[in-house]
Length: 357
Image 1 (spheres, rainbow, N blue to C red):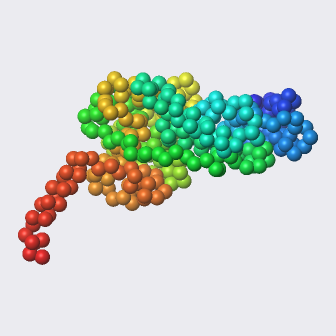
Image 2: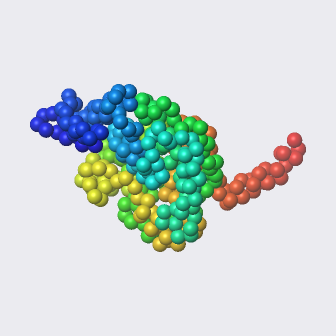
Image 3: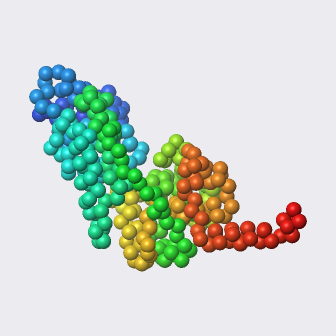
């Protein structure tokens, strides 16, 4: 992908099947130029398939890191973490399908990849654990999206992933932190991670929503934060801030040197993409067992909100969920909370009013 501005015009410059295409576009900005570049590549791909210029079928690596990567960068330009997530799966898929043509990939080959991928050791895993079913399913989902795009371009006739069954996932590995675990974790966390974790624990926001916060998203007078975009259409919402969350965000607003409240250390003009490595290091230093994921801080916040008495419709809006059933999945009463509930129930059973009734 090569888009640049020359004079007052935006140009694209790329090669396709050994031919260089350097053309000026009527685009007014870089995003529009990227879209026109993707359209031009799609036209060329269609000509290769339906015309007589195509002497060979396009290989997976060429399409994945070419047309598909370009399309993803435009489609998810407002969600850089989604683009990064897709490309991580593309790299994993490329190790298996690299030299295969798109036409030669069939459901049986996808099944072979599914089994082989599930037997690979997890990256950086010291206990020899294999790749989880959820990770394999994410790769298959990206492969399905890739082939759907190829179908729309007319490169292939059908999607081979449509006939493949995904692994059954066990989604009961969520964790709710205790007060002691939270304190130990925040004590050894880096300043950036500590602020991100604090906002998650106080508001229940998703990590990506926090990374993309701008100065204008924090209302100092109303002590609230505006989440403009997110994972779903319902993610856009206003969240009132607790004292601790307001302290963190107001401090970042005062010291912000760009529009982003959580700028990337490498490029302050862009938001940070991930704090996963910092999180893993903090969990190890805090010696917390069993380990927990960064996303579990969101589970912890929503669970605490539910235990504090916040009703589910309100919790649904605070969480940015589209359905209340999804909110129910994020509510995990702790053993202490269930014990207190049974004590209240037992006390209710012993009341004289109930006995007379």
